[in-house]
Length: 260
Image (cartoon, rainbow, N blue to C red):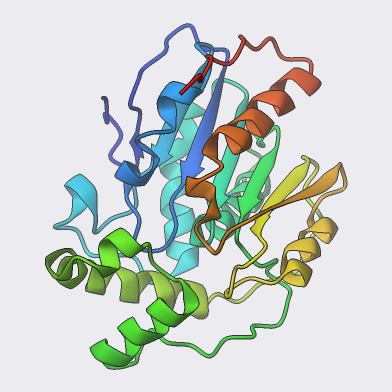
């Protein structure tokens, strides 16, 4: 595993790779949440996992509470990795980060992703249906997260891990709850969204709202499950990402078989 750039973790460096996929974690999430994804990609797609401050090996850094600041930092950090065609995938908070980063890259006349995959994340212009929770007392904040499926069960059931995660979770929720969308021209790359049919946080209408943000193709896919449905369907989602390279005319190796 390599992390020459602290903002990105590359579990498997692939110098011969023809393209890259950047994976953007959800609120509270670090690179480890995508650790099982890397092996599912073919040999000529290199995976880079976005590493926000305050978690993983960056646990001693202060989490960023402003989306504008986060995107600015990522814009600087990602530039050495834009030498190959690339795709973004973001889940929940990660979907908004990926979208705003793509807009910021365009604003700075830098390379654009070939496609953006957005999962369990409301389109930014849609009205917010949930009240802000980041400033609530600890017990109320955690109860809200539990009710809304805001964090995975493995974290909720581990008090020690939860104590460590609280400042990061608060910062991430503050970042997304204070985010103000500013309208601009749609992106020119395709957008594909994924949703959970039983997601209490994000409605189908909020997901379909992404259609206005691309002048290219828009598609949506829905799966059984709550806010974290991706854990059960990661092979399908990775298949969609790989398929997008085939349809773009890029040369993509065959996906490894998964008979288990």
